[in-house]
Amino acid sequence: MVLAALYDIHGNLPALEAVLRDVRRNRVDQLVIGGDVLPGPMSCEVLELLRTLDIPARFIHGNGDREVLARMTGAETPWYRHAREEWRVPVRWTAEQLGGHLRDAITSWPSTQRLDVNGVGDVLFCHATPHNDVDCFTRMTPDSRVRGIVGGCRASMVVCGHTHMQFDRRVDDIRVVNAGSVGMPFSEPGAYWLLIESGGVELRRTEYDLTDAAARIRATAYPDAEEFAAHNVLDPPSEDEMLEIFSRADTT
Image 1 (cartoon, helix red, strand yellow):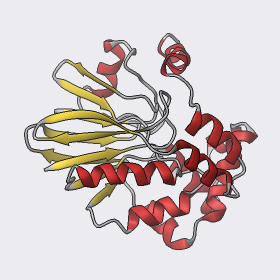
Image 2 (cartoon, one colour):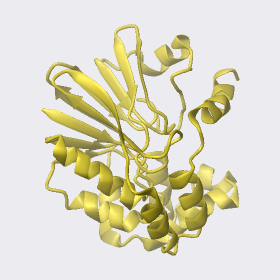
Image 3 (tube, helix red, strand yellow):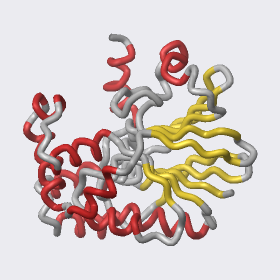
Image 4 (cartoon, one colour):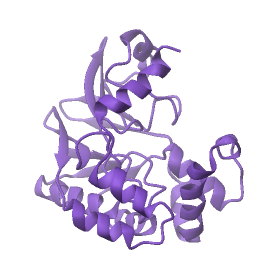
C-alpha cells in the first residue's frame, strides 16, 4: 500500500491541488487527512474536493476544524472566549461559509486513526499528539518530553502535524514523523506532506505557482486574504524563527 498523509491544509486550495497531482503521480492508494483542513480562505472548495476524491481517504480533526465546528453549532469554547479577535475572525468567517452537509462531515471526523502499513507496522495518525489536538512539539523538543507524549501509544509509528514543520525522529522504539503543512508551512514556500511506501517514509515538498495561488486567495472574501497570501504562501515564516518560538514552550 502506498499512503499519503496531508495535514494542515487551512483552506489553501491551490496548494492542495498541487499536492494531489503529486499524489496521483505516486499512485497513492490511501490518504489520511490529518486535521486543520480549516479555517482558511477557500475552505468550502477544499472540503468539497476532499469529499469527492476517487482515492480512499480517512479524516481526523484538528483544533482548527474543531473550533470552526463549535462556531457552526453555536458553542463557545474556552479558546474562542479568550483568543485575540484577529485569531477568532478566520474561525468565525469560515464557520459562516459552510453548509449543513459540510458540518455533518466534519462532525464525523475522529481524533485519531490507526492503519496497519506493510513494512511499517501499526501507524497512529493524530493531529498534534495522541492525547489531544493542541499540544506542540518539534524536532528540537527533548526526548524526555516526547517520550511522555507518545509513550504507551502501542504503535510502531506516530504521524502528527499541527506545528507546520516536518521532522522524522525516533524515541525509544517509536518513530515519530511530522508531515508538515500543505497550506501554511513554516519553511521555504511550498506544500509539505508525507509519503509512506514499501516500508519507507519520505518527507515531501511540492512546488506550485505561488503567484497564481496568491492571486486566487486575494480574490476571495476571506477577511485575512492579503495576510494569508503574503505571509503563508509567498513568504512564510522560517523554520528557525518558529522553532525559537516553540522552544519556549519546551522550557516552561
